[in-house]
Length: 160
Image 1 (spheres, rainbow, N blue to C red):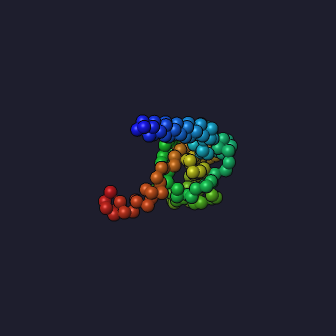
Image 2 (cartoon, rainbow, N blue to C red):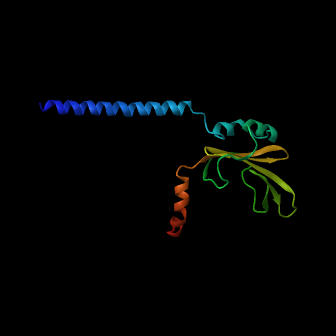
């Protein structure tokens, strides 16, 4: 009679293991069927250096802007090509959501335009000059970005 509880426990463990495996299988299927997030690495790769800005915007599928994220959302740089920085002699002048003109402080002339396409999964930033793409960057969302942002202040005060 002592054998029945052991067999019952075994059945429970088998059912539990089958449930865990079924959950993992459902998770994998969902990941495979879900579309990739907007402005991912594939979108970045569709834009090539020297491409006309209008063609690059068409390749990204919508105008520059922040889609479901704030402009200061935490992202990590994952790829870049071409011109990616402008020197300190320039100032950013907002044009519209996600678009800034960089102007020379000395002459006031627009040197380049930076356009940002940003969503929760990633961001693409293009630098264009004379209507052509001269630089591009891809940014991935940073896991634990909110937690890191919250911890950054205290950690800096501790000297980290």
